[in-house]
Image (cartoon, rainbow, N blue to C red; front, side, top):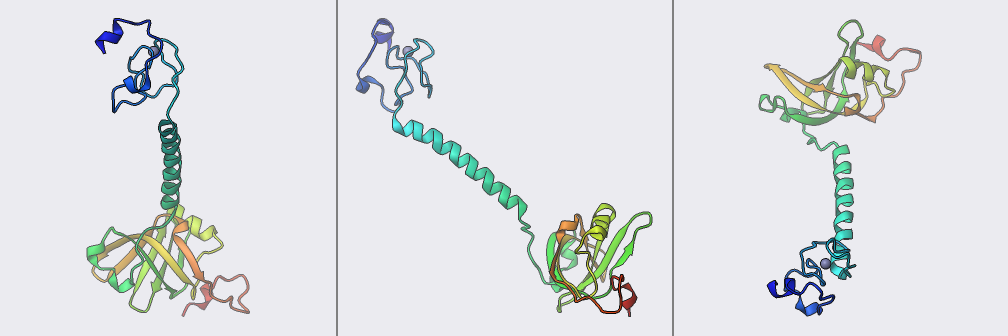
Amino acid sequence: MTDKTTNPDIALVPCNARPKGQNGALCPACDRFIGPLDTCPYCDLPVPRTFSLRFLRFASLALAVVGMAALYLLARQDLRPLVKISEVTPLMNSASVRVAGLVATTPQISVAGNAYVSFPVTDGSNSLTVVAYDRCARGLMGATNCPRRGDIVEVSGTVSITRPGVRRIIMEAPEQLKMLTRAPARPGKDGSDGRSDDP
Ligand SMILES: [Zn+2]
């Protein structure tokens, strides 16, 4: 390398004069390190790039785009595990889970003050109470899929077991309720959301 810096007028050197393992990293004219640049910043010589380096640049860009797209799709999916309600134990307190089952009674809805929506879900193995507060509750009330008695729903949320025997799942967003089967509308109860059907 030192013998070439003493001869800066050399315009071209044979390709095989480049040190092995640094293919394209050195300017063929001035032999200084230029990395992946297309033009030498020292002597302005255009440096022809080998296919592999150009390919790698586009491949890395494509890989980044594909990776971001995959991340976005994964983030949109609800990856919480679907569990049987009987499997929800105090050990799972604060865990994020998904359960599916029947809305056993008409949901209790309160709009005054701290709004909440609460309804029991049973899946045959056991039952628990699903609760939504404030913004989530208001969003649920306004949604077309606000649960009614007899609906079969899938709900995800955070397990909250504060007292033995009282098992709840707290929803954080209305989108965490997925309507699987809508209960048939009851004839003769126009305008009612089933509240009058309470046993
Ligand atoms: Zn150069």
